[in-house]
Amino acid sequence: DVWTARVITLFPELFPGVLGASLTGKALKDGAWCLEPFDLRQHGIGRHRNVDDTPAGGGAGMVLRADVVDAALAAARGPGPVIYLSPRGAPFTQARAQALAAGPGVTLLCGRFEGVDQRVLDHHGIEEVSIGDYVLTGGEIAAMALIDATVRLLPGVLGNAASTEEESFSAGLLEHPQYTRPAEWQGRQIPEVLTSGNHAAVETWRREQAEELTRTRRPDLWARYLADHDND
Ligand code: ADE
Image (cartoon, rainbow, N blue to C red; front, side, top):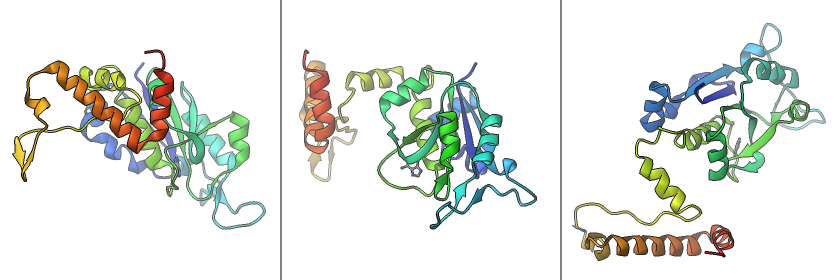
């Protein structure tokens, strides 16, 4: 059974979108994962297939109806968790991507407007996940980010298995800088150690660069890294 992302959205035509390109696109064509968009509109109410209504208590915008979302979930639900993409959710992390990649797939609910009626989230115990502290117009871009981060971790998808190994080796650190030819550009040289042929020295330099970048740019990640490695 191939890892499957089921996506409930008012804009099914947006998928696969960017996921159809590059590494994830090739893996999709090769059958290494599966993408199933579900049109929320198909579960809309009445001749106009209404999916939303005005917020109880007043205010701007529209709220997706609990009964409509419930019907879409019944049609879309597969193995694996259901996740509602929302800026109120728990932060999406590399660890979560790894956990999802180890499972059978995910069902993603994309909101629009002011959100989804809370009752349908509570009724199904649906988890909320955020891709960052900013507000997108809808959940589709967030869903694509979550799928991309997860699919590249599926066994056999990242053509170069060494890349994921290098990533997990330096887990929790920002990546060291990269260089390629030409050896000199705009008067700037490639750091000498990288052309020395001394692999141990290269590894030491890269580790130092990664640690220094993380310490200065992301003190939050650096604190966690130190806590996680305090017995090494
Ligand atoms: N929907 C709107 N903004 C979002 C965010 N930051 N993360 C996840 N889903 C969203």
